[in-house]
Length: 257
Image 1: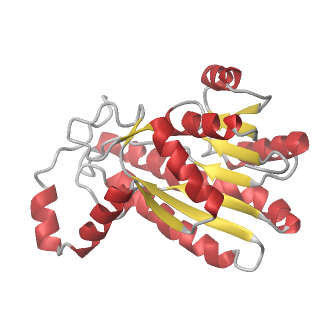
Image 2: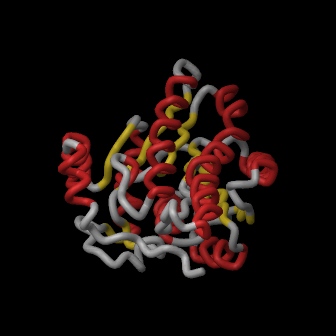
């Protein structure tokens, strides 16, 4: 990166992909606002980075708290150049299990509504500045609904559609909207998956590739490129064949009740 230090607000920054993105951008001189629910983990990430960065202990599902975090970041660093909505929850769910109903709600609140809460407080200021990027982390899992992952697949499919809509809303404002659809990444969210994860990437490798997409201002990208091919094939599979293949696939564990 060249010129003035970019200002970046990042959710889900306490571990996994978020922490990897923080390392990537901090190494390039960015001024970061690191947001997540765990103060202890956030402080650990911030202490490991070069430069001085603000931490924001917040739940993305809380609109008021996110607005306050955005205001706090802008009071310290100014209007961000990039906002990355990365916070996410991934857990197996089954509609027939009554105990999973609040889990469904939580997954959607974090993965979809949390993305809205992340962007909303910044848009007016970024529009006034006439530039900036809003990047949302969706998933290849949003391309087709995966059995056992109804909440996760639905929330990520909704995130992809939401980001597409937002891109149209903000056309002509100078703001870019980037949809990131990663495949498998080595993070705490995938550590317990009891099935093969093709083309899985280390978190730092994934962060570097995703950051390049963000910095280029591309509207949509699947990372890695092999998963982009898989995603296209999944779209083309007729429903009977898709149902047959994936009904026999491994499923993400549900929360232990």
